[in-house]
Amino acid sequence: MAIPWMWVLKTVPWSEVIANAPKLVDGARKLWGSVSKQASAPRQTDDGASTVPESAPAEATVARLHERVGDLEANLEAVHGQILASSELIRSLADQNAQLVRHLEELRLRLRRLGLLALAAGVVAMAALAMSWGG
Image (tube, rainbow, N blue to C red):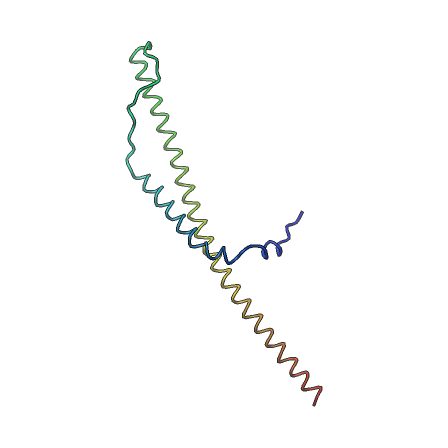
């Protein structure tokens, strides 16, 4: 089923979209800033209590814990990379949205001017037609 695009465009509250675009851009930039700052901050590991049973040999337990910590750090780095990429994408989309809103506002103003110009041309044409018939 086709989307009635004119209906969609008419129902969008463009004044709210235009008013909230700068807030969206600022929020995306803040998100990007906070995520990128976290990327440069050094990470600390927690040396808390382990869940490994004490009956296991100490060397095997330590080796397993080091392996597990390494796996967790690798997973953490992968997730952090994904967050960084996602926040970059959000920032980029917010910038594109701001540009789109700015261009839409310019087009709206041009369309209004064109409508007024067409109305004035119509009035002049009607006046010229009335004068040619009348006189």
